[in-house]
Amino acid sequence: MPLGLDASLVGQRIVVVGGGVMGTLHAYIALERGAEVVHLERDQVPVGASVRNFGLIWVSGRAEGRETELALRARELWQAIAEDVPGIKFRANGSFTLLASDEELEVAQRALSRPDAVARGFSLMNRDEVLARNPAAQGRYLAGLHCERDAAVESRLALAALRHAMIASGRYGYHPGRELTNLRDGAAVDHRGEVHAGDRVYVCVGASLSGFTRELFESEPLRSVRLQMAETEPLADSLTTSVANGDTLRYYPRFRADALEVLPEQDTTAAHYGLQVLMQQRCHGGVTIGDTHEGERPGIFDAPDRPMDMILAAARSLIGPALPRIERRWTGVYHQMDPARSDDVYLRREAARHVTLITGAGGRGMTLAPAIAEESFQ
Ligand SMILES: Cc1cc2nc3c(=O)[nH]c(=O)nc-3n(C[C@H](O)[C@H](O)[C@H](O)COP(=O)(O)OP(=O)(O)OC[C@H]3O[C@@H](n4cnc5c(N)ncnc54)[C@H](O)[C@@H]3O)c2cc1C
Image 1 (cartoon, rainbow, N blue to C red):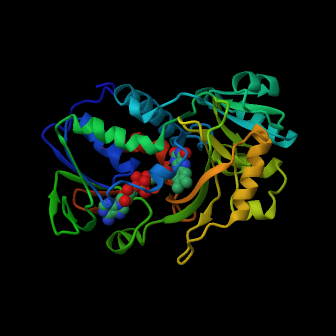
Image 2 (cartoon, protein in one colour):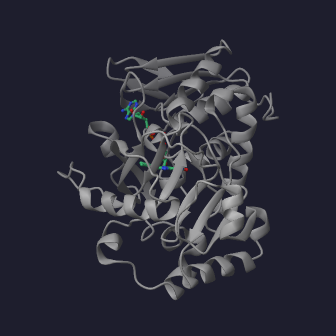
């Protein structure tokens, strides 16, 4: 048991609905604590936000206080889980936020002066120092804010690797192709009318919802955000750290207040699409690049080209013209807490006796999932 959790769930049966990272980590932590787990998933293979993301285990930009504490604990858990499940491909690769102007540099310097800079592993490096650590970062920038605590996993491999490990426990039953259509006290009902009863039920169905589950979350203080992503053909070099550009300072809560004060206004189109650049090299060599942020609206299904063109131009300015051609693009949707209605980090709500809804972790759900799951079983 690399997580060192107590066996407080021995003899209990836990039902988890949703095969994304939130549901899968609930199943994993429940098993670690000794439970028998029944895991339901609507699709044959999960294709939600959890397999569409960067796989960033991102500590650097988290809001101070509870959000950062959860992120640090989650990172610790991911690293420990990787000892048992190497197939998640956890890499403690750190990140650079590459700073291209004096204003961006000032925002980074302010973050460095805060008391929590040490816990995040922040340090400021000049361009030569960045290049010594990440020789592929050949673009135009002045310096890099290094975050030692940032890490990455391989999103498209992690869920299957975790399920594979859980099956070996003999206490885990995975049931793909089972859609939740109703809830009762301590039970989930699937589309065949089969009732899956347990001591507790956790509903982790993400943000791509319809019918019963859409109505289940209708009155919650959530909003749905749609992102555009792309992946390149394999890069000749290795991008040894995750990479972000200075626009991320505008959006990550740790930096946002300083960025609003110090940075010039973002270009109108970029601001409209909430543009920022994040890059994470995949194990096969391609680079996942994103992202845009738009409120999900009924009837909108297309992905406009212009914002992605802008992201790719900005990505080239960081790592140079050697960025390979784009091989594939996709979009993804997550739930986040609506800041006008809630300041919780994520949504945890009792929907019936012994039935808990978990969602709303937003663009940090991949990072936080193990720590959120741990909170469920404390
Ligand atoms: C493009 C993108 C990039 C991101 N990048 C990052 C990142 O790098 N780092 C980070 O920390 N976070 C990131 N996030 C956020 C993170 O991916 C999400 O917060 C997280 O994946 C949400 O996990 P989930 O399990 O709740 O949802 P999902 O991954 O959507 O999983 C929900 C599952 O429930 C199933 N389901 C739905 N309805 C039913 C039903 N009725 N019955 C049974 N099953 C059902 C779905 O089929 C799905 O498999 C990103 C998100 C996106 C969209």
